[in-house]
Image (tube, rainbow, N blue to C red; front, side, top):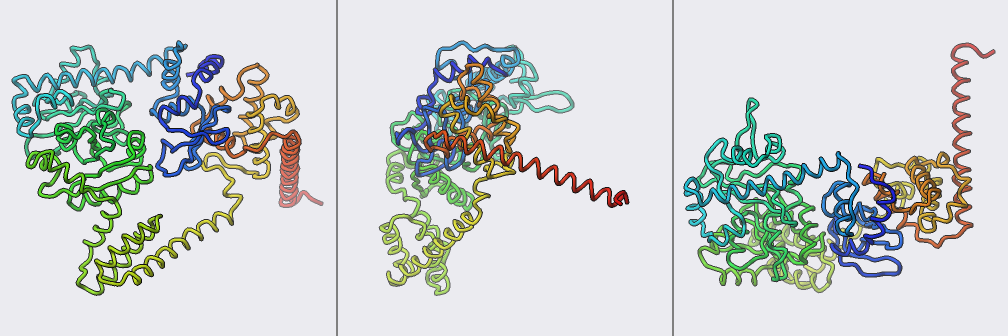
Length: 579
């Protein structure tokens, strides 16, 4: 929906971007800007920049950027109107709402409320006669009443319409049940999606019930059935138990594969456990975890699938700036079984023995080869050297190189030489990649998004400079009156320039409202322009840029006219019209 420009100006003014961003990112000042680790992608060095005076953010790594409203949209996964509403609530402002907006937001609110009512229904059924089997199963699995209450665990009766009937009685429509993924449909009739299953509510970090996981109590399949993707549930962006684990004081998070493992850990005092929702760890999961911890202990199953998942998860977590330890289960297939067999004290010992990711990776490589076989030992040395060569610290390379040499029964000098060769090969690959980038400067200047391309790089660079300057000093728009948006080679930059001129003439805050009409990609591109062009404002530079833009525009017109005339002449010649 379109909000009044004056309202957006006030909203932006009353929500300073550095204050909003600092709720999610630890920022440190460097000159006029603030820097921190990007919350949208994994990184170890701070490339996420916030410019308080311009009211924008920009990441030099993933190239996302925009204003305070766009940041709220990205960080919380909100639509534009919902982000405005959240910021208005923060600032104590009343939102001018239209019917369309009210309808969309109320639909989401209805789905949250529906899932909350469904969770209450399932929990009540667990203690009703119909849920006796489910309660007995939960007790056999060692769950206490306190745990059942804390996680809101329930039971879906073995009925085709128990939930449907209960929710209809609460006033929810069949369409809302469909939209919430709580029912299935056949021949035009809906019926309960979850039947005869122990039910685990999935709760987001804001405390909203957004979906469910249902587990069978026998060997039937599928063992787990999760809610489908809906307007309020995305399994790639949520983790089971994070709403509780985020408050843990243990200083780290434990990442496990299943609901039962996470619940068992919480019940035994490890209140920092979370689980993925029937999917492998994603970059979105890693970014989400990085908001709440700097250390993750990975505990995946010891089978091939679990170990492959561990190997995939490690680089994603490290890229998000998270330190990784890996715990290998012993004498039990998973944490739930271990805790029931041996208790919390023994598990604490396992945690203390958890290896860092380098030890884990070196051990995994070692187990792949028969080190009594000479050919296999050579392969082990080469693969171990490749892995060790990626370590940034010379001390780490020395320590783990020594372990690999000892395992392969070769001299440390030989291992050092192999690591050096692997390191040189890697440096050569990276150098070649840099050289290729440097050989294509024009390509490097092109926008990252393919939807935004520059046909005339020379003019576009001048256009970028003009926009960056007038955003920094809007008064310069008095000196650019002779420059028309139609003279811009980039349609996007011309549109931004036109909007800036319009807002300036109307006496509105120049930067605030420009972002409202841009797409996510366009906002990121504009934020990048401002961050790239940090040079001091000089009128002579502005005049040069205007001259370049207008000259390139005229040259383009002449070229187009010449091309058109040549085409006409060729057409005449083909038709025999020339004498």
